Length: 274
Image (cartoon, rainbow, N blue to C red; front, side, top):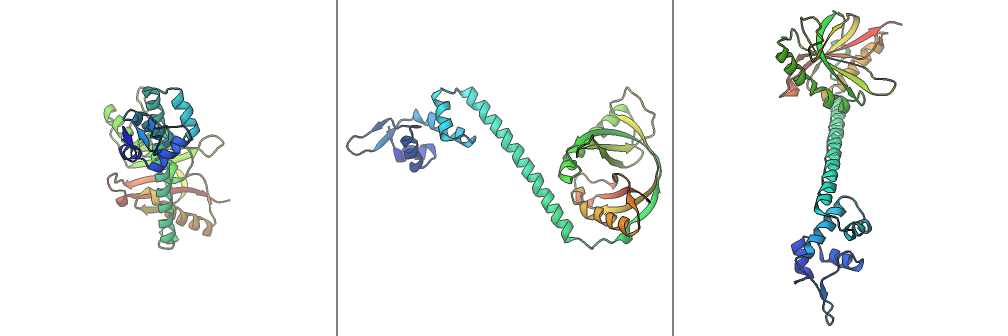
């Protein structure tokens, strides 16, 4: 048998924790010296200790852990619970990472305010264009919600175009529209093509109409930092008596998947007079 100190080191826990587990009946020592009160544990008890720590890390209370262990939770059930918790933690980490990315982008927007001026905005007509497209739904129009939805669409679209023998005739083009009455947004990922619609293909062919008047501006860098450029468009629209008339299109003049900082994107926001 092992002293409480040796058992704590083997189980990678503290002596204080083992004493607490003993006091609540969660993990009793195998033997206690009646004269000294020293606690002794067996190697077999490491199995229960491992389960205690694993279940506690799942977020369960010690009382809940004791009920589960006393019901003789088997290895397969424990593995399933751990895998579920791992998936939950991974999703939380991904969400937190995306949130931090959004915060950093917003801070960079604040830091660069005033560097671009409304003189960079050009009002022009956008001609009609035929595109092949794939679509998906994003939770909202916020960049952290849009980016993970639109990014996988383009590689998949180009893969399908190649398989169908349809060559692109222009740069990538993205546009958006509301989905229902909530904040959800339909994300359209398209690229110019010169073929007719065909139901046999696994992508859609869409004719985008001309836009009589669009406020346009060139955004340099990753789309995660587009907010500052959009704010330039907003100021120009307000200063010149126009109103936004829908979502902006994004024309990817230079798309750099390996180095988003080298990207060049023309933002095209339809506008109208009252």
